[in-house]
Each structure stands twice: as structure tokens, then as C-alpha cells.
Figure (tube, helix red, strand yellow):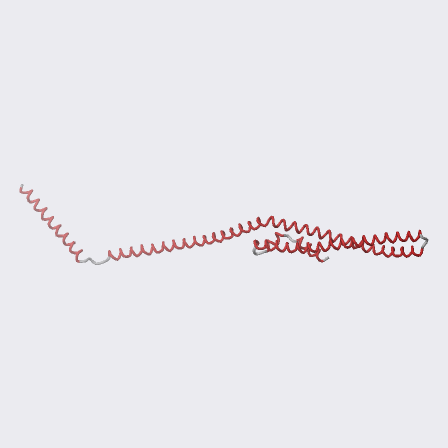
Length: 228
């Protein structure tokens, strides 16, 4: 019964373990569900075949038992009729059927055990499929949440890079401002060291003339006060 060994492996597999190994859990859930349903169809067909074998084995055994009973009745009738020779023939046939009965009984036992295993396997696989279907929406919702979180993590990393870029821009702006301040200061220094222009010199002598006029006015005032 290779089919039984094959589907024992299916039963032993763990849904979550398989999902952990896949790259796309969302798609894997649907894929694994389809695979389980395909396996269920195979198990169902094999189970039906094994159950049919069991019924056929039971039918053959029942037919054999019926023949044994008939041979026994015929042997009794032959003895009652005083035909011992014929009775022996019926008993010989019964002995032959009895050996066949032993083989048929073993077939019935084996086919019954196989049918039981296949029915249990079929029920267990149905249960797994029902469980996965009931968990499908929940699992896929978790996948969506995880994917969203991963996107947020990537965006957060991008914001960190943006923050460092802004800081670098601020440093560059500060450096440019410093360069402008230094240039302005240098311009002021250069301006203070320029030679006096004609206008500046004229103002100088205009001031000296005013001081001379003030001295003359002061002398005149003193003279006037002395006369008095």
C-alpha cells in the first residue's frame, strides 16, 4: 500500500513549517491549500478503491461460506440416502472450500485494515483542509500587516537618510554664510585703507578754516570786553 505511506508523509507535514520556508507566504497559503485539495481527491479515490476491495473480499468470503454450508447439507443428505461415496465427495469439496475460506478471511482482514487506515487518512486530511481554510483569512491578514510593517521600516530608513541630508545642507548653508561674512568684512577693511579723495581733503581744510574763524571771533570778543 504505497498510497498509505505516501499520505502518511502528507499527514506528518506541518502547515506553519512549510509557510515559514516560502518566500511569499500569501501565495504559498493558496498553493498549499490547492495541493492539499489535490491530495484529498487522490486519497478519496484510493479510499473508495480500498473500500471496494474490502466489500469484494467479504462477498467472496460470504459466497465461500455459503458453499461450505451447502456441501455440508449435501453430505448429510447423501449419508441419509445411504450414499457414503457421494457423501465423501461433498466432504472433500467442503475441505477444499475450507482452505479457500482461510485465504479469503485473511484478505478480508487485510482489506478491512487498509480501508480503516484510508478512511482515517481521508478524515484527517479533510480536517487539515478545513483548518487551513478557517485560518486562511487570518494568515493572509497577518501577511498583509507584515508587508505593511516592512514598507514602513523602509520608509523610516529613508527618513533617516533624508534627515542626514538636511543636516548636511544646513552645514553647507552655514559655511556659505561664513564665507559671505568674511568677504563683507574684508571689503570694509579694504575700504578703510583707501587714500583720501579730493573731496575728503577739501572737507579737512574747510574744517581748519572754520577753526580759524572761531579764533578770530574769540579775540574780538575779548577785546570788546576789555574796552568796557
